[in-house]
Image 1 (cartoon, rainbow, N blue to C red):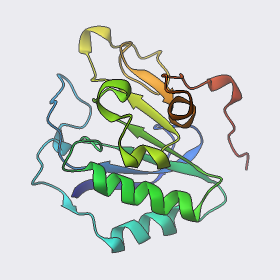
Image 2: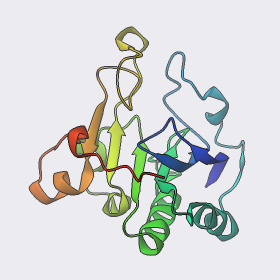
Image 3: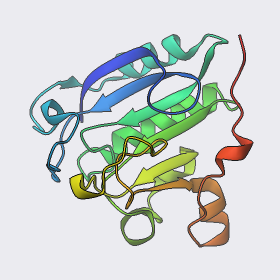
Length: 172
């Protein structure tokens, strides 16, 4: 598995200040994707234990509220095991911080039985569709995408949308 870049203080991809990692490789190639440089599965750098340790070290600050895993496509069959390893290591070290992930796959059709989801709190699913784009949407680019509370969805067996009104963000 490969990754494209790491942002050590990201305020755009999830609530609060986060560490974000952009996985390398995507099969969807959505029109006007905001990260086309992440599409090539052979690009980027190898995701190693040293890289995972670096992500954990970057997140080991009180002002970091969580980890965001984007792409590329973190849930692609070539990437999902690495995504799961990273999310698991993060949740084990920081059980009170959250993990968000973005995917073009659908939770209820493609992902609900995947082990990686055990360590993800919020999943934004569905491919970006340019015709459904709106800059007013929170945490997603197009209106067909869903912001899902993964753990509640797994517990109930139904898709439960993330309730933004209860969002907790650490204050400095």
